[in-house]
Picture 1 (cartoon, rainbow, N blue to C red):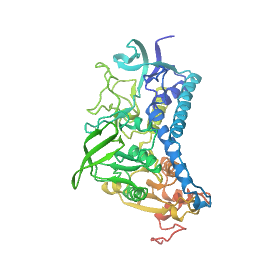
Picture 2: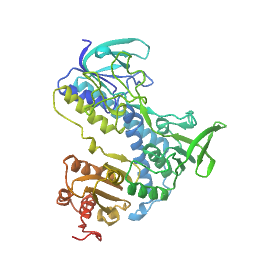
Picture 3: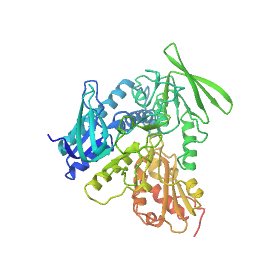
Picture 4: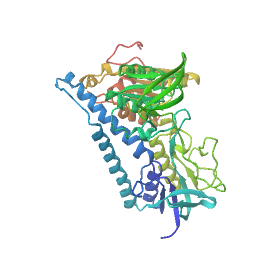
Length: 478
């Protein structure tokens, strides 16, 4: 086998493996480097998202959501009693899903002719890639093009050092196999809220400490406010402006968490503590000093809008570059770069990247928030429609939340769509498509939505922008 490739991708996460498959489909001789191995020394594909992130967390969220729905099935006339959850079986199901999907990627590599290089990849000058195996031995390869897709790792904080079985990062949180009576979470972001929701549904007393004084600062303020109200009803104790100052493991069984808030120094005792304060690029050891690729002080690789680094033929994608750390963003960047290498013209639309939090209700949005637009001085108009007025949502007994559409007052172009509701993660795709095609509010207003569907809320919210919503009282009349 030749050591020269058209493309070498470093990292087999949702950005890297997708880029490698796409490049191979386009006829490029492609290799993908991955250092992650299991206990038997076999390669682990799919990166953080598939193994200890997106997929396993959604499996746990779905299992506990079904458990919660069953507990309240009497609203539908279904009589249940003594509903219990086998947590070990729930975790085993999660593990099986992950195993099936990682095996699927290996099959896709084989079917598309992607060469897997097992080890840690390091870029040297001249687009030479060194692959360092677990035993320390190394092999060297050359490529016309290289994609850096090394992903990210959890941020650790000195006041809460990880402790096996007690103080956990997002990976450890996924392997809890017994419902803790008291669960502490540091960070009220996506991971903190999702993991908090999983265990609150199973009966844990969940306390979430958030250092910021604003809840979900990146979301639209109305969506965040509604979500905070609903989470409180679910008995998630979210404490804002609460900064962790220290932890103490007591008798190897519980954790004392010290924190300070507006009232001063406080402490709580929990059985498990999840640290979910964010992620950082996994770029340490990725680049040799002579590689020519530059990073900022936080480890993010500098790239342009098409993910080119300062070295011709070297690209970087996903969590190691600017923008939100989202699997779908990484995948689309990987496809874009593979197409660019193959000579095609393509560009990711960074104004139409969806964001989702998979709690229940779910939060989802695309585009700018009302606060961002007002800060920019934009003239906007908005419309909202509550799921409580949706016949299909009523039938599903899932009426919390609303859809909000924000448009330009002068051009009518849609600038953002934000929602909190039962299946917001599925509805948001309609909003992304609308924004991808630069749709106006009128375009959505004139689109026929099937009845009865929950998606009609998107239609009605668009109508509400101009005071034309049919199934609620309108403030605007024209």
